[in-house]
Image (cartoon, rainbow, N blue to C red; front, top):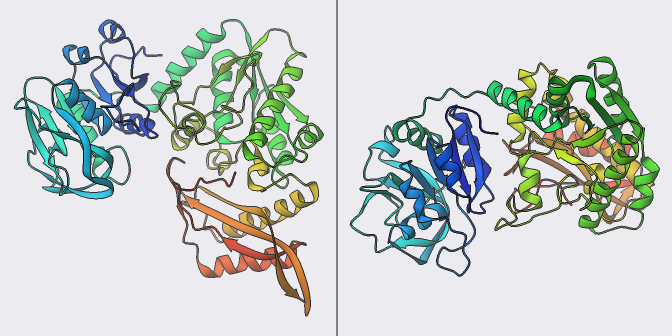
Length: 515
């Protein structure tokens, strides 16, 4: 897609947070692209980037088959920044040693800056950083200058004396390194000499041009859920090809209370799109009957969505493309972007849950963006706040908030409880700053007392999290009065529930959804 005057290339060595690096670069108004670690360097000779960043990764550089790029990267005359694994690899390629550390560093650390030029310009002498490594650089050659150190790491940051290579052992891309964005800014502007002329509107223009080129004179069917991601995709494609776009909203029987009616009303009245509604409740629920395994649930749902889209596409001539609102967290949790070293967490219905023989060519304009970036595009496209700030809702819907086999009666219980959570939080004005807030129905019955009689009924968990991008999340410290009101309403108004609990786990180690 790169047709811009300046860009930064990121080589992905399998880090779960590679895209956070891209995000930090874009926040500094510099465009970037992510490439596999073994990219042919001729690509960069034809179209030189302003800089190259080597990502972190789960491997050790000294083990067999560890992902490595060619040392030729340092002969391109382009500044290179290595992060964590990327630093270790860069130092190894430049004749330093990398070994397993006796004292590993995970989490918060304090870094003492010993050379405040270039990379650390304008920063205080001591900064908080986020470490995540079990290996470290040792026996560094005289070719390197030491820029920073921590209590356990003598070479927390280095610079090669003759080549434009910089390495940091910590992760400047994560929010837990508070001044990380400033470090990235210094690399981009002080070292790479970027102009910083890229904006989100540039992304819209570039993506619209790419969609036009990919589709040609063809037609596209878009999986439109009503959320900000798929809505942005629909408007981007409509901007590119107009009426050759067909938008389909599917009720899979796993939506929230009154959601289908609200989505249909919005898109038929607000947007001038070719919009179609399909009620596939029976198709999905019958397929999910007696299925308890979360991965099977996700894959069944993914397959059934494709079945619906194939059937609908037959009503129109020339539809060869399927558009989805896939975001980068979906991709990275489902599989390695490059089929390589990134660990799989779970199969998202629109990524790992898709059948091998799809029958469509995919169009996923947002798959290297985060939710907040999708929201920025939504604002650029003039979408209403009701869509732009709608809380994320997973494609598998309530299926991943219902532990065990789907039961339609219990599904109604979950819908009612979920509605109370949403209404009470929004009525209290507590939704600002929240990423998601919802109910989960547990396969646990507990003893209670109602009207002086013994009950043995369901347990509902409340999940409320704060996050910037969905990659990490913390549980929200809601006021006790609000939690008490939610609990009281659920127990009193939702038949079959006698206990409510609050989920206080973070991501990681937990995920935001329960399945």
